Length: 181
Image (cartoon, one colour):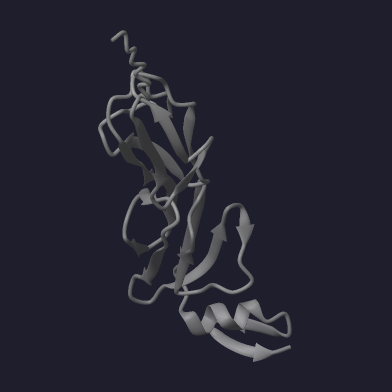
């Protein structure tokens, strides 16, 4: 009775899935299938502008990963956090800016600064990132912050009405009174 039996064993296969939360993407094959005990191909978590890679959902903290000796399915998400960007705030004269002082802003977010002159004073000049603003606004908003910014506000000891008079080249001021020239 010499029967022979041939067994064909196939190694179990596992599905691997790599995804990203907002703030980044994945390079490499995001859906892979590998046999038991083998390795996946490398994938890399790539942050978009204003974000940085934090970790994978399974705790791995390197952006590039190659899963080796795979013995179970893997489904992980790359986590990204918004970078903090600094806004340098300076004042001259009598008045305040709110919020006060230099501000760290999460990448991609917005922040509004409000200028409050002391009694009898006015906002004379607002300079944003080195550019003088055409008018002297009472506030300034930085939107979708992804880089460094500067804000310089100069307060004057003249009233808002006097400042408006002096801003018009057709007017002159004599003893605090505005005249059409």
